[in-house]
Length: 95
Image (tube, rainbow, N blue to C red; front, side, top):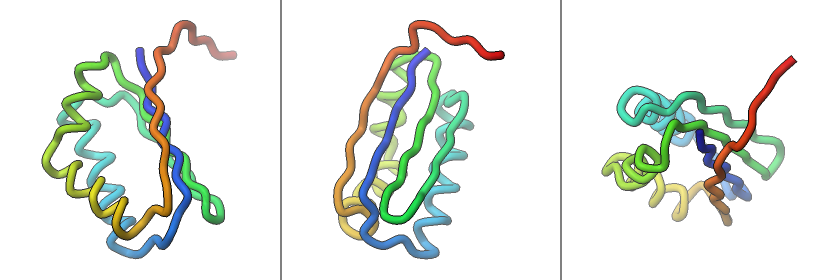
């Protein structure tokens, strides 16, 4: 399993952002087999973690035309800066 960790410094979030974020989350789950997608914003910091079964699904998601529009809007309007990390989950357990 893999996780994508998206961290951003927020510039300005508006109503269009909330709508786009919900659409992108659903698209990732419905079309690209995303297993879970959680995002939290606190002050000017945002973190989103999504979980995926394979890297190929992550790459397909990254290249999706709707997602590319959202990425562009993020760079131009919503985020001052961002960082994306793709990590492999070696072990998982819960209590």
